[in-house]
Image (cartoon, rainbow, N blue to C red; front, top):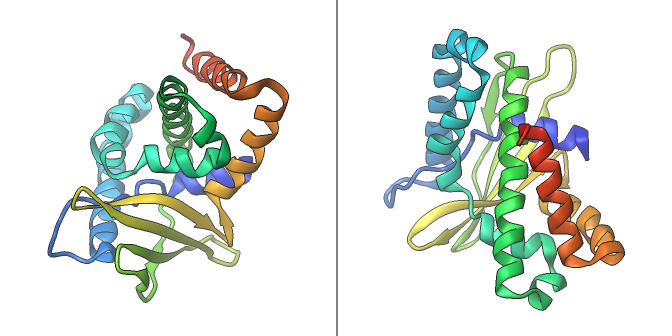
Length: 200
């Protein structure tokens, strides 16, 4: 899971921007270029103040991921059993988990080339944008972004890295935790992990 998340976070900036007339692939590519350009332009500032990365994440990435739907998919049957308060709390902690992991992993970015592959449509409002991230001295890593339309916008709801789904991976690990400690136990564990990571 750790390796999966690290690879994911190196290219997590491939989010989508709102644009009714653009294809999801065009949106993903445009935002990818914006994110990577910002990383290069602010490299010295980020080295001096690593906390600035959260500003980039909040501005470029967060608005374009459907965290509520991702949370629903990750919890699966437990989402239906959860109260509205539990759903809200889990979504908030899950979002924080992904954001802090992303922010931490951005420092490992070393100008890997990203190739966009032919676009694939699953159904009208569910599409897959396929990419490959080049790795020096090794095979490229295939990364597929699944998007759907919500409120007239394209939003990412799953990322598949080298054939492994982010949603499926977290669903497995979180399900084990819920069986041991319940939904509240999982939320508490995520909250503590997030707090420890931020020094809060």
